[in-house]
Length: 107
Length: 231
Image 1 (tube, chains in turn yellow, red):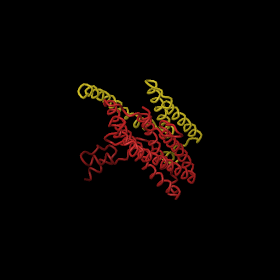
Image 2 (cartoon, rainbow over the protein chains, first blue to last red):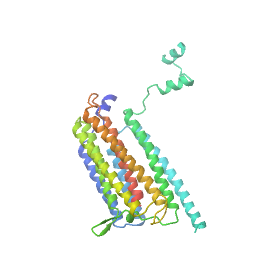
Image 3 (spheres, chains in turn red, brown):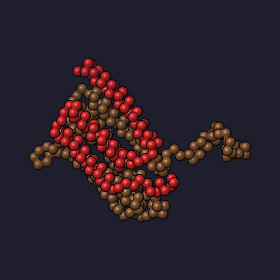
Image 4 (cartoon, rainbow over the protein chains, first blue to last red):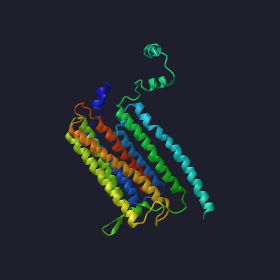
């Protein structure tokens, strides 16, 4: 059973790939428009993050076939990067502290 | 010695200890993921790469937040002068579309490979590699423009915060290196595919594994585009 799976592999209709391709184009164009139209503030950052995550999700789920892989592999790959959120949180706090220290002592 | 082998092979065997136990445990042919080892290893490699790029991007966030000098506006720094007007981020937008297109052709190459259509699969892989080369070429143009015309250096630049150059060259340089390595890999596998190396076993999964790497390069660019160029 394993060998047949290994030789046939992931097969999905080409139409699906083309649709995702089109979606990625539209999403990229939309995130470019955010910059082109000078959207500012929280709306800008919100839109950038949303489009980024949507594109990343589509690439991983469809192009990299994660949507059809076994759950053990999906969780082994997708859960560890969540640790990075802790790193980002710690470094954001650290960077804010450095910024305030620089304002207080180096200006 | 004989008694050890007997206990290892026997059905009521007690697991050996010490070095013998270590070797027995690591070589006992167990499988956690029901995919080929090649695919599992590529995913684990990509996982390690996720951490590398995330560390770069987190470092970039740290220096950008902590600097008291204004960060250069990427929208203006990466603008192209077209038809008498500055179009913001034009080159970066084109690079994004080129890389997404290469991901699309790569996905189709995997599809053709699994159908055993190796001519179409190899052709699409070569198209993908060409898009990749185009991307690296545009990146080289962007770097030369920044270094020679704008005077950006890893330790400073005339537009603002000194950390801009270091973050930019490190992140896009490492990504460009990944694209270049992917192009080499694509050429190598496309060559072997067209030569018929994979026909004997009838196993074309190597194309999907190369595809995983290539889509990952595109995935990283999605994050760089959003966090470095648009932010």
